[in-house]
Length: 199
Image (cartoon, rainbow, N blue to C red; front, side, top):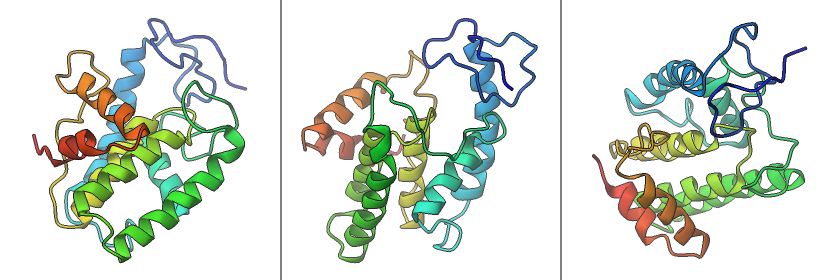
């Protein structure tokens, strides 16, 4: 059974239950980020170093979970598993599965019917994934990865501005948070603008 002590210096979700690292050690939140970043780098290389085909990135319900596991599974035992707890953001836990399936279906429709430009579809995927918040943690990074994989799969380069958004000194952090709030109200223009930004 994993320890549920707190991570020293944590600023969010500082419960370490499910941590696969040596829990006899004391970790700062920065330590955890480093382990997560190493894990995420492997997923980034897999999906963004070359154009991923539909076989490797099918944008299915099962693949959504797999991607999260690939990004966080070396650090957390709950990686790739839908949350059963309520968070301060996201849909109710009992709706997570249904809403994620709806996103998969909507994406298939948008893509097949060319309902929006590729960049707007990426922005909408990103926003809806954040809005659902299907996992205990790592939802923002997973959502941004989804959007970047979609861009790459459809012939566009991934965005760079969203790297290290956890750092408070990131120049795009405030714009990003504001763009998500506006998308909550149906205005995707700021998020599309950010998604269009390649730097």
